[in-house]
Length: 185
Image: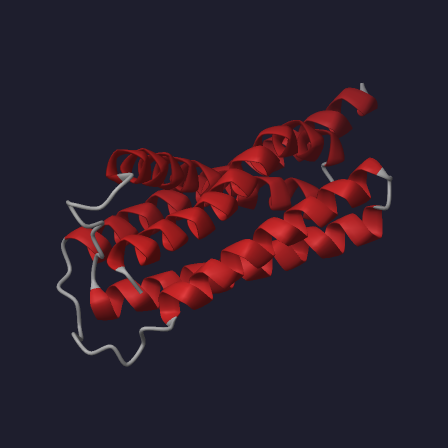
């Protein structure tokens, strides 16, 4: 009887944390939607024109850290895996800060109507955005399970989190490059 009680306690303790993560993720997604599509841009100058390139670098570094972390976990190097995943999280967080700053200052940037590959770009961007909204709570829940010692739950959700997070990071770089090429800069 004591074993059954001890195994159910961690699971029940996770529910409020997961609910909070989902609530925070939904609020963050709604804020970003508002910021990009409703809120007017604060500035029209090109003073912070470096932000999209910096964000692409952060996305690329996050993808690199994710792949390194994956190789470490396959080799059962837990400490190195954890360091790599925390590094990926830091790069993704820096990306998000830069992304918010860019859109607060400059608003939305649209792919030119006449540009080649517009349909592919819009498909890629849409998949990127949808999966980014999904990735945020997945990443946070995956980290919660890892940091709280719930390794079996961590493993189960990480199987979904990793490919989605990697896809979002890589497609962030690709969409940036496609947009820059289409705009001729």
